[in-house]
Each structure stands twice: as structure tokens, then as C-alpha cells.
Amino acid sequence: MTAELRDVPPAPRPVRLGAVLWYRWPLLAAGALLTVYGGLVTLMLWFSAHGQYPGTDRELDDRSTRASGRVVASEPVGGAWTGGGTVRRVRYAFRTPDGADVEDSCYVPGPGPEFGSAVDIEHSLRPPYRSRVVGGRVVLVGSLSGIGFLAIVAPGLALLALWLRGAWSQWRLLRDGDLSVATPLAVRRIPRVTPGMLRVRFVFRDRHARLREGSHWVRERSRLGERLAACTDGGRSDRFVVVFDRRAPWRHRLIGRDDVRRPPSARQPEPAPGDPRRAR
Image (cartoon, rainbow, N blue to C red):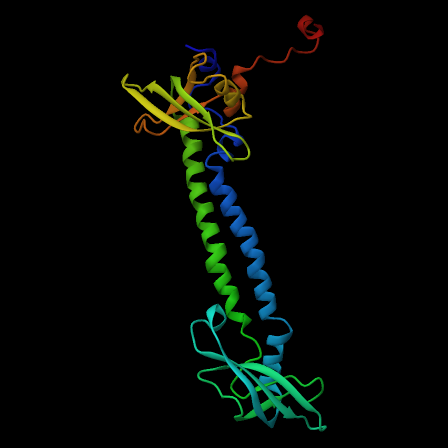
């Protein structure tokens, strides 16, 4: 029995949070990145959809007057802005009640008016004159907040859910799994990964004495990683503690002293006041 095996308490053993957080951490990092930044993008799109220009659409719905205008430019708009429909961006010119000539633009669903067509314009009652073609909209930003959520935030939440499921399974394995002694076969550093990670292959025997082979990543800066870094294919050999599921031995993990906490009953009690050992 190795010294580390004696140091690992029996099940159910208290598990340190770091041992769980580092489990499949790329899923955690990618999910957090997509969720946080995707949430910010979605929030900005939502604020844009409820800002000045959509407010102008609501204002024109409530109070507006009409004028006659003429289309000076018309072009189709595609992509996510349209929500899959046919939309044209129309630029037009009209004359305000105070005699000023104004050029403005809006989005019109459907085929839309062509260049040179006469159109009816609805505009605000006071300067600065906000306007749109009758049946059109000033902006189309409103649909993008939902697209941003589905395209960025939802995949991030799915990755976080996968990581949480794996972390919960890892915590239960470290807490309740059986212990055995593992011998490393190969240890190599994973290139271009920060923080540094080691990939270790090892063999151990399950509770039926069957020889099993396993592999996983270990953080290089951990106590277990420092011990593994000294074990290379041509270097010295050592033995480690592996925890495995009794019913499914293919679920296993190398474990070190910094992955679990010793229960209070296994620690030496503090000398009472007045005890001669307290003065030493």
C-alpha cells in the first residue's frame, strides 16, 4: 500500500472543490465565454431594439401625419435582419409642412416600391421629422436579439449543462469510488494548452483483480502533476492512487492528496490549554 493510499480517507470522503472544477475545464471555459459574451451581445441588441428608433416606430404608430414622396433608391436586404422574409431598404424624398425638402429611409416588407415610384409617407408632427413609408418600419433590430440568444447563448448554456453533469458525476466518483494502485505507462505534456496539462496512461486492477488501462488529463501544476512529470517512458517508475466506480470500472480517475480533505476525526486534536504538549 502506497503512502498516498493511506492518506486517502475511505468512502464517503470529502472532495475538494478544485478537483471538480478542473474536470473537463475546456467545456466550462467555452460555455462561460459563449454565455457571458453572448448574453452581452443579446442584451445590447435588446436595448437597441427598445431604444430611440423602435421608439420612433411606436411614435409613428400613435401620432403621425402623411405626405407624398418619391423613391430615390431601393435595394433588397437579406440575412438575419429580415428574419427570412423579403425586405427592401427604401430611400425617399418628401416635403415637410414647413416647406423643407427631406430625404430619409426605412424598411418595407415584400417586393417594395421601385426607384421613382410615388409613395405615401407618414412622419412625426414636429421637427426633427422622423418618417417612414406607410406600411414600413424604421428599424429591423428587434428580431436580432432572439437570433443572438439562439446562436450564441443557447450553445453556451448547453456546454455548461454538459460540464455540470460531468462535474456532478466526477464529484460522486471521487467521494464514493473504490481505491486501487495504478502504474503509469506514459506521461506527455499536451502542447499549446494553458494552463499546462499532462496526458497520462496507466494500468490498475479493479476489485475483481482484472487489469484495466485508463488515461486522462492532469493539471501540470498540481501535486499529482508534479509527481507524474517525473514519470516518463524512460524515467523512473512510481505508483499512484486511482479511484474507480465499482459497477463501472471504466469510470476512473487518478487521485492525489490535494483532491480530497481528511475528515476532522482523522486529524490530530489540538492540545487543550494547560497540556504540556501545547508549549512545545
